[in-house]
Image (cartoon, rainbow, N blue to C red; front, side, top):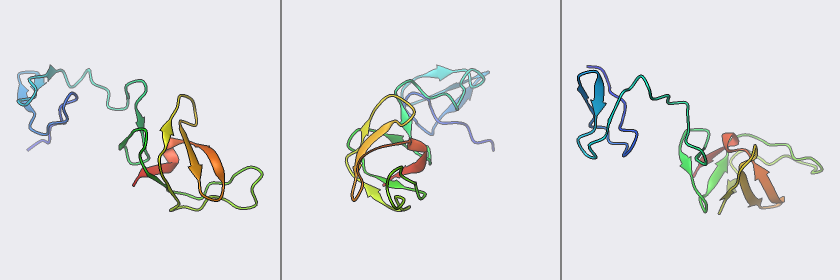
Length: 113
């Protein structure tokens, strides 16, 4: 049996085929799966390296050593960063890293804790 994608509105896993479209029994949303591009993210939505949606105040873990200009050492993988703030731009996370101070990080180098 083919696994159908979850509902794009409410993320319900109980979607079903209704002719050539898909439908959600929980919220009633109907959509054409060929028109939905899963790589597109709504504007302002920030995802971590695993695809989890991040929001202000979340705690994240850095997934790889990150060199810092002007610092004698890199931020180590596994460093936990609390109370992040999401901003617009290439480096879309503002935070304070213990031992380094205020920092701007890219969401692709963190995962939600």
